[in-house]
Image (cartoon, rainbow, N blue to C red):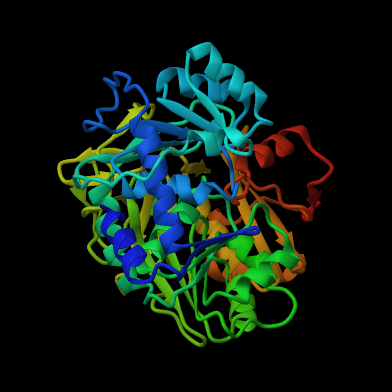
Length: 501
């Protein structure tokens, strides 16, 4: 659990079927499972360290991984999914000092990295952690003769993940096997997946949406396709062998080029709100595809889903859909549920959430109220039962005495033709408390933009200043880099061009 039974079954029943294709490396289910059993044997041979903060079952080891989309990444990740071992999923984009702090807090039994990551290797040496460069002969030498994989317990941990933190301390959490087993069962139905749902995921395997796509695809017995790094010509070759795409909106937009791809019938996207212009572009470029847009969080799993067909959607485009299967929603303030249409903190109840953080998050982020869990997102339930996101607790802007959530304005901006992306901030103002500032990407005329916003929003929610930006900064997970944008605002960076004078 979650993948031990599925991989064993596929390896016995269809050993020659393609499991993983990454760069020039192609592994069948038989070859992948054999390689997992060899890696399992090698991990079992390592001395087991005492881990009071991360209790592991007998015989399990914790291995840290920081190799990006190297061809060995799917085997290492599938090993954590199918064996008793646990992967600590480091982000290769982290600075060396952040890697050092994380490894010191949770030293693994072994670190798998690249030979070019000299700072990471030096840190491991200082901490007494064996480091194996998987792009050298050391990895092949590490593997041992195949060893049968024991059954795993649903409550055992299989992954230590991190919510964020390229410049500050990330919040660490442990995820148990049963939560992804429940997720896999739910998403199979919600996304209409079969053993023919051959999947292309162009994003980093260290990010949740891509890693989950790998688990989803291997559970089905379909083939998973990825790239060492994003390259447009390579994407077309990969898409030619697939029927499904899993990508954050920024990468999905990059795929909508050249000739339409009629072989793609399902698309799954998350990580940021899918704006109407991109949805229209995706419908044109993938004319046979349904687009499954879900809202969720690393700590909560799936929360809600909006499925867009060629002509219609299962929920309004301004919403993030209706509750995901197996998930209940409750919008609450001070422990009590709020009325429909009233802003409240979004709580979920189901089998998909974590138990809590290993460290970090004492003053923000994930928390529980009885059986209900939240990460502090604020929203409201619409009259049709769909959910709209308004922002994050503490992210509310108070302007001229009015409470405003920036995401509501961002959603309104994204619904205007000619706007490709939008971010809204509240900046300090001497008389208004805070004033609303919008940064947009797109060629919508200012007069049209203002008139359309006036239709959608009350006067006090209209941005006082609007800036245009031609090159949109993104985080490593493909989301708008709000920190950099805020810095540019304060620094009056010339890349921000005033549209309002």
